[in-house]
Amino acid sequence: MRRNLWIRITCPILILILLLIIFWNWDWFIPVVEARASAETGRPVSIQHLHVTLGRTIIIRADGITIANPKGFPAEDPPLAQIPELRVEVAALHYLRHQQLELPVIALEQPVISLRQTGAETNYTLKLAASPSSSTPPKLGVLLIHGGQASVKLPSYKADFNLAIETRPAPADSKLFTGGEIVVTVKGTYANAPITGDFTGGALLSLRDAATPYPVALHLQNGTTMVKLAGTLNDPAHFAGAHLKLSFSGQNMANLYALTGVPIPDTPPFSLTGTAVYQDKAFRLQDFTGHVGSSDLEGTIAEAPGEPRRQITARLTSKRVDLTDLAGFLGGTPGNKNTPARMRRPRPSWRRRRTVQNYCPRRRSICRS
Image 1 (cartoon, rainbow, N blue to C red):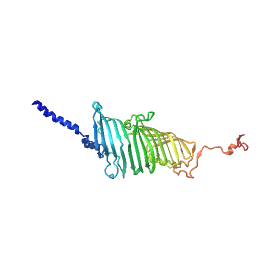
Image 2: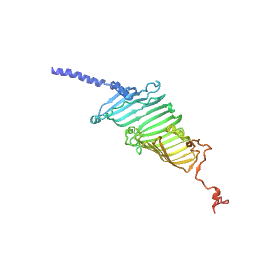
Image 3: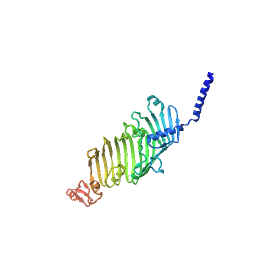
Image 4: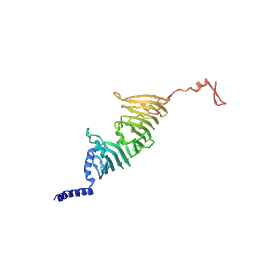
């Protein structure tokens, strides 16, 4: 009797376990994952398929992820994000030992991001759910992006350009990028002018490390304006500081407003090279050399907090200055003939030199007296 009772109890359990193994489908958990992701991002999130591989490192793969636009955006607009495949690796043993979530790898395969603007509303401003202050943030490893694309259409910036995004290992001989890098190329229009360029930054997840400077390199051409910079940012999430070697040139400094947001008067063609330093909310452009029109400038310009307005201090030297080049800074128009002409160190006239030197017609040269 006891044997028959044991068989009657265990057989249904074994059959149920076997059926679960045969017919188990992780897609059953999609509604739960979608609801959690939608609550975290404040946007409808949908997933087509979900796969989980169990082991010491749990591998979770979600296919066909879509993050929708907020309400009010045209239905024909593409969604904010489409990710054909997202792979997340979870260190299970680390969690059991330390009660902290560790994600060694987060990989996105061919993600497509579409940044749009309708009126004053943008589709990329997310209302992220606040995490409890007592919760321990996850320990993140590397973020990998393969074949990423982004399109940007923002009428208020007169911008319509595309981005290609890729992560890759850092070159073996690189001194600036040592922990992997992200490469972004851009092509399209910005401020109604053609824009092309490429950006290289350090490993994306290192942005969270406030103690380690984040390396950057940028080469950008917007219309006739060219900008190059290379250096490091301190705690870029809060922009605590920067040390950058930069150079820029173009037909008119006023065109820099579209890139920097700083209004600058009209100028003739210019070029400038120097070091930009930002620290303690103060900006300094030091040891720079350059030309504005036919005038040359070098020195240091510093901007610091002050009351009632920010203070700007400049120490400039020049070997040749044409005030018509700088008329925009003085309230005039560059090249205006009414602006005083160039100021430079006076050279001796021919009559003055004639008192100590004589011209020899036969030798066609100056003869010492």
